[in-house]
Image (cartoon, rainbow, N blue to C red; front, side):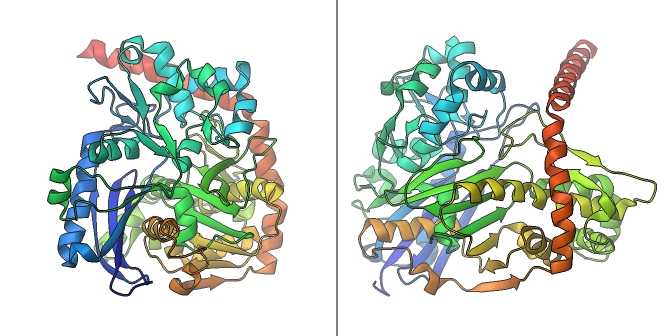
Length: 525
């Protein structure tokens, strides 16, 4: 690899788009990011403007190239990472007729249940690798086709946000295998659109983009756009993959037995295997990375957002005091939780404040404190909430271990939670495994660039990432704490499985009340 050659990784995320320029040897030269809003007018809707995101992509590329001051001839390629499960309907004039409907949108939940319970959903999952859930384009397209003929009738193509960006650059609709495998409609064996899935949605393959490998490259960027971005007109764009699978490369969790765990707003746990495999119990996903690298794992809805809720609803006065003393609010929360012994004196918190994806795949599950007594104080509730997020991730880990053929060798933990020493140690104790926190290098952008080097045959494996990434923390499990958590874990799992019927009833009640309140507000106006 050439010290004087550069590579640009672009990560199109849910809250912002980032670009990072690296030397081919891994050093960061320049970076830029641009945020955008999500519209959530009610509890089921989560949409964004595709045009805002496209302009953010252009902005971060332009700014990063400008800041770096490198000659365009020294930039080898631009490679992409993208959030999964988004859906945009495009008309025959190639204009978006819907906003970008994100993974967090739940409006297709009725059709999800139908697919799951009446339309052979489990068989579709076993072939496609995406659990049946409102997040997936399989469910979203079915919902639009069934309930919104005014949109479906005008739709020429159903695409996601990266396909929207690539269409603006290149004038064609292409989707990489990685994002294709996250639609719930791509057959993992033949790497083509799955006939059974399309039958459920009611559409044909001509309404979907052309599927290509994650290593596919494009060089015919629109000349005016290339000029605006400050790049050579024949610049090579590597289509790349999804943010989830690329971050495994970016944190050096690529070898068999390496497990990556991320907790940001939401969370995920993933490992790489050499061939696609699905789970007979339908708990985990299987997404493509390359022909020899497949990522299995599970996303959870409830990560850092649970901590934010605890901060706002249970510790507002402490946080207010901390602000005045210029102390970070989250440090205050962990200080409160530290006052309590592991296990929170038998208080369990199920962190399903936003429904849940893995391992339950049920948008209607709800959060709860269970085991409250007069002896419990606020600090027990704060600690139980932190423990509950890790307990839930551990239940996904158990499913993962069942499908993996190799023993777990390492756990690499990243995301906002890794700043908290208490939370890191809690993970080591609950998982009863050593936990390593790699240095943060914008893992999805780095993963995209390493995939670009692989596509360009400048590397023949992802092992080189080991030389690029050190670690900032390592935690060994405390045996006494691990024993406490091993006793509580079966209770945590059994309670959430036992309440299935009650979750559905509570969710139905809440939805009915929400509609009644909305009607009442409309009448008042």
